[in-house]
Length: 403
Image 1: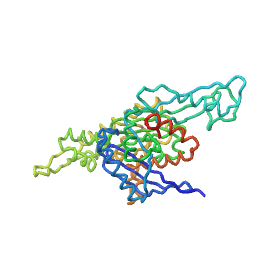
Image 2: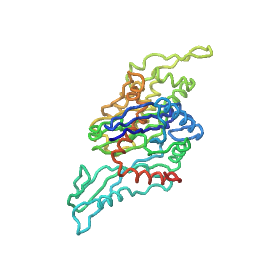
Image 3: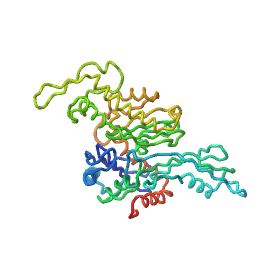
Image 4: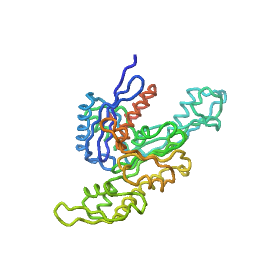
């Protein structure tokens, strides 16, 4: 009889560190047992800047997650991000020998190896080799063309890689807790598992996860990843812009952004004055609402334009479903209208959770990556025969002591 298993997802973000614990039941349904969360310290633009502070944050999230879930956590699926991580597509071509016409497993392994073999900088490491499509004699196949007759076999892959030491730092931090790392996952790929259905991926969809200091994105076309990346702009940059323009403290700028700001171009949202009280008794600072909104809008528009720059030419015209916004900053008022204006596509924005407790996590966009790691773990379980070899190669490449 099949047994339940436990999977744990860990996100070390610029603003928060989250550890989510889930039970995967024999029927493949997932039950969230608990979550540990702490405010991040020592993380800049999604990367570790102060190792000791980050390790303390992970330890705090671990203790809370174990306490809430009543589970002893031994390993995690770890998300990573940062502008150093790049996603590229590559096609490998293999011509069957003259005396062979039927595609067998050996031919498929050959063409996959050719497709995955791309030149990356010497200080980079592979994070993902994701199969996109196979083509046999110019005809695209919906599945691996095993057993079909043909001459020329092509495999199309999406390959994600990043700077070795920066990925290594995250793994080192986790292993010194000590916890094992089940797998390392590029954050937007995890988020997409929560945001998108299979139908959305097939019809074409763009997921944009806007965090505190980074904006991650992943594009699906024809059911496969066509582009992924990270730009170093997020919600904290918006707050800092408000701070610089209005001269109010950063902490107040953050609160004013959330409570009073609007990213849309609707003139009705930019009427009037925002008053910021001074805690020392000085007269309130008055900020024109139009100025506040223009500052917010300008920075978020920049983030969206940088995402577009990272997409293949003509990709937006191929998106059939639309743009899915997630991450904490996706709750900014008017951001959906701004995204529609920039991308000229339907925009899907998560609603604020109307329930409390564990169930609230499923609706709160702040937890899309952490929850997506659980779904990613389930997908790997379904592909278990090939999982161990791929993971071992990955960790040998970025962790000197093996796995």
